[in-house]
Image 1 (cartoon, one colour):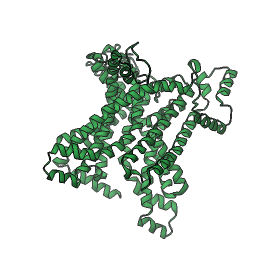
Image 2: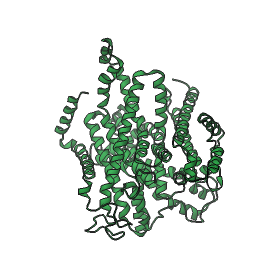
Image 3: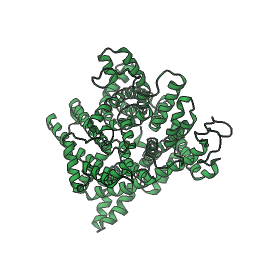
Image 4: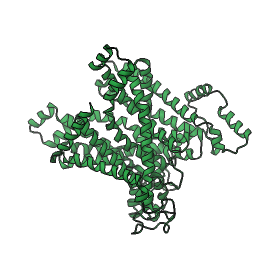
Length: 291
Length: 336
């Protein structure tokens, strides 16, 4: 698929927003808006957040009121400001882990698919084994072994998704390798490197956005889960949704719900945003996928 | 088409490299961290103490020797001894915590199947109608649920505000039934211990609903797409042409035929179930493998952490093996 046909598909998608397709269209836009809004507030956190997220600004555990719309936590910090700043942590780790996944997963998939033979068999076997293993538990093991820091948590999350990209890219390379235009390129004496990067890679890259957005959703959940379990990327008092949720849990029995509910709600919202967006993108790029 | 026996042998042989690769990954992951002993004892521990534990764990040997030792010991079901609390064998501790996880998983799985199959079948029946869209959105939302948050909301509503159900633990204190299988519900039934049964079921409800709803969205989707496929087949048209009521066509003819692919996919969700169980357990202080693992990570009990992850790896591979063999038995078409 060339970039121009991508544009055409986007155009058709927007044009096709008829009443029957309205739901699809609406959901994609909702997803896009949620993600855009959270990214926006993360970038402009110093202007959006009313208070310093790491300093005491009110009484301890104030319930949501006009001054603190989400209340204050056990240390008297404004929860709304922490939620806004916390989006930076989550998004940073999510994007970092996706970058690592792409850098490792795509070349390995290209290599296995193009070279084939023993390299392919061994890589496939390793990737399949990793794919079968529960992702979160693998991430827990890696994060626990490497120790908590931003880069190690990003690596722990990335490792879970490398097999997904590997399998997808490899599968496509296998079918592209036999296609006519690659054969033609080979016939006129193109080098392997040229064939991989000029002929195969551009055709593989278009299918990545579908998986990308859904993986971002998963990565947000995994980052939050690691933070919740105490294996997160941050050092307190840096705000982080999963960690804040865990810290707020102790007040639950006293009916103090706001310190944990709001950070958790943000995790769900961001994940939902990425999921809806992913569904929408897959609908745009490949309408036959869904019935 | 190959015979069932050949298929079984082939499938078992295929599971061996998978297990070996996972064990190697676990080994490497636990070693890249550098020196676990320094991490256990802290930076200021006396040198001879560090040396003693290194020797005890075999960490002073070359890496490849350690690796073969590790595989050899695993082969003899030896996961080593815990580094804390009386240095109990890791396998014994795992087997103490596993029934709790198993019990939670079984109940959560039942919840998710019931919700998933009915919403999925109904969704397919009302294809492209508002109800269908609603259930599709339900599928996406459940996928996006952060288990600790969802569990917390349920704890808040049913535990804290309404006071109907306990918010944590597995059973009320001193109510544990006599140990037979380690599954409290089953043990209570086997020993006719009604108070224990009620208590354990009460404790099970919120965690299994949390985990069950999280998983149900996947089953909704699977059932829906499989049902839609089956509903297009000729025998459905034939059933309708014979004037059978729509309910009979959907739930008797179509659902029955959509079931095998759904079952196959269910086996694949086992890894997700385990990962979800880890989070559900920590949310509800459920004394299973997940709570155990995170607790020991916190104490830097390195052998136990390694042993638990190895246990998870072997469990996942074995379950997928068993599931595959079962389907091959049920549906001969699977034996390719």
